[in-house]
Image (cartoon, rainbow over all chains, first blue to last red; front, side, top):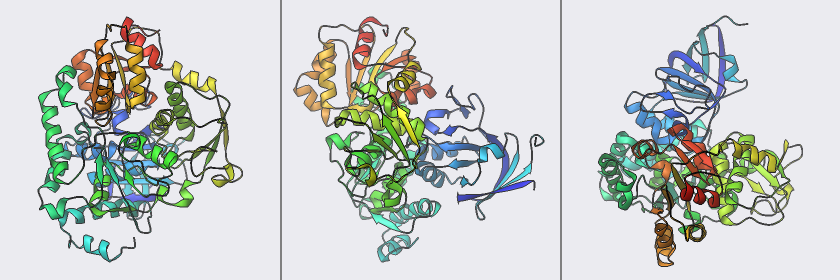
Length: 141
Length: 410
């Protein structure tokens, strides 16, 4: 384990995966092509990238209430992110994550999008509200 | 979370599996946010268009609706946000039969659950506004921000599953904007310019939403010389919620909790001056002077007064491209009775009811109709549609109607 970060909020079960990181917001309706599992909003920092099988690490939940349903629908087709990590989160993301049965950690004393990088292998442990870095995608500078 | 006897009984399944499931969902959310207990709510408002629900969400609703009536019906007045179609205009929109079939299944399920199919995102103008201090469970961010800010009611953003759960249990977890301390201002906005047009009010809301930046931010706005009207605050709040996920703002001397600045703000808040330049800069990102494929007035649904103004603008024109005006099922009969619908449609426009453009399979109907360059006066709509493959253009209602007439946005 290389580093760990505690969150203020957590739900779901423990898991490991590869992070996809950006200091940008997230809304299932505004930002995604949910059919194909890619970020479709041209202005989004992850535009064109697939989120399938990735732990999304983003700044904050944005936009409307649709994500509360959409995460469940995406999960039913295997087109949801593996898990979600946010600096701050709104109720919609918590409601949608709960319905979809996903894992989410949110609220850190640091900027979690600056601490992690795309490609990092990380572990989420909701019981202890902890994000652990298992392997870095690139050496720390 | 502390549960009273009634909540314990629901959780134990004594009121049936539907209410048990609903309370369990609410507990997950409440515990995530550290809620101490539940607060009773008097109304719920559900966003549940089938583009969001998909097959999985509709099947989830149908499963709830399959239980006996006494177990499945909501306990408080529970109403709906716009649906994903206006069945009378679906063919003109080129919506596919499967979309309509999914809509019908969702509606059937909601009716069995005892939900009132109001199909509106302007319930505060058309059905029943919440009152100051009233705890409610509203979906649609525009409804929440208007109710919290202009009415002084208390709601978090309640997505469809949570709003339905609140309808079924009659309560919601007490966190966020149900709490006094969360309703205090966190940043101050000093206005040095006051908009006149609705698209300007929307763009101003967008600028402030971007500055606020997240759900827990509460802007307090100073500098208004007189109270804006309901439609202005509708566009202002809807855009602020859309661009910033903001659920509550205060306007000193206007909104009910902010008679004076010190009622909602302590010393030392971050301050921002916002004026015409910031609004024009935001609008410039949604203008390029080219051709237009379709004009849409929606998000939020139009009030009777907006339709009256639109009818005035349509008189004597003949449109080259489609113009869609979307309103609520409550407003449309009045607009028909007063001749507004006939005047808009005489120019070649179409008035739709009970849906919202972006909640009606916007990507698919855009592709089916060849609509990419879309002009609107809604800042909220331009923010959403970029992700649906459109090039959204923001302009005044007057300029948009002109674009419908000429095919070019001047």
